[in-house]
Image (cartoon, rainbow over all chains, first blue to last red; front, side, top):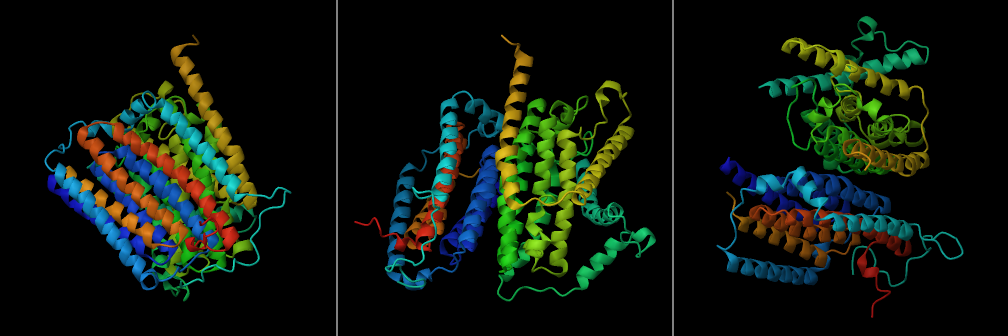
Length: 191
Length: 331
Length: 100
């Protein structure tokens, strides 16, 4: 059982890293979004390894099932395909980004090494806290106020999204696509 | 051991039931439109599905040259896979289930929310305007109707007091949920129709507007997979309607009059009751398809967001408060 | 048992990949996805800490982070649609109107 868990962890984490790299480096936005879906599914698997069943399922429903479908919908609606070849055209920026990224990773790993040995072992309670009952217990007692605030946040987000996407001018005419792109617009495919 | 047997039987049943549903659809359509259905292949045309499958396999498999080959190939697999994954938690009888999961209702909703990818990817990968429009419609429609579906299921869970679908089935022994919660049942059935993309919600593949919708560019067995998935989803949704609202494997008011039966007898009764109800709802799906016309897309969105969703939320709140006062008194 | 360091290391790697994505990509929608990558990387470490301590607070935080992410995605995508209507592209290099 223990060996199985380690294998599952290695497999899932490699998949998660590979799919996140796929998301970042893929030229087509649709492929990026599909890699992102796979990434979110592997994360749900990792949550299961951490005994967080409820979060794993919610991750699939909310992220993979709703948010990413929305992303795909917008990408297809706007039909934006094949952005510039990111590696070829932005070589300098690309190297700079990688250096900053390496620095960031180095910093996190350094601070992590300082903590080695102090971190706890998997608690026996982990089985009990990941279930729906346990989360529901806390959510509707200790976290009632944050829950209500989240509800207000979501409602205002929906209303705000409607306002932005259905914007009309003061005289009531709908906002329309402008005839010509601004002159200083960067051409597709290169700087 | 039992669960493996149930798994094998139920998956085999699901796949073959899709073939039976195709035959039934064409015969019932014939009966409704006052004509013969398929009646040439075998007695009463019973071997028509076999002939269809042979025809599909022998056809040439075409990928649009401007499409995306890989995505075009994996897209048909996704709806079939999600349909089969659903079987894992459906109880076919008392103790007849594949897996006893703590949060199986949430699992069902999660699987249902993944099914939309197959159609969206198919619409995208074909690189055709009809397909893309079909895919866009599908994703908008399925996201919209997941919400009333979820709320209707939640109103059922209030009676069971558990997220486990086995408890939902068991809680309906005397009173079916459709009697205790009729509005939720109607909302669930409408949303299930929209989720399986059947008439009156079949805008995704409206022939007059979009040729074939998302599967315009599909041929051979890839098209066959979509066809199979559509009927598997009809069967699955019938099973879910039965499980959540029509008493699952219980006879009407069975808790009040049904005597204790021996184990094998009870099992046989449960399974046959469940399958009879499921067949009725498959028939219902077909009946509606050949009777009612198609909505326009605006009507579909309007029905989902501004009618079914508020209604389902009000229904949930009312049921929750009534149950609360029944348990705690009016003080 | 898998030691908690592995989960945190994974979280750090994923966060870095997301951060690099935000720096190199120009497509506003993909940029958005990279931000979601970073958010999810942090969620892993939160769930890991929560499970290893046997304390539910981390789970709740992730749950609220999920709903905030949903709200953020809705508003952000609406903004991207408005942007596309105005410039006919989702390339963030075109967003120079407010630049100092």
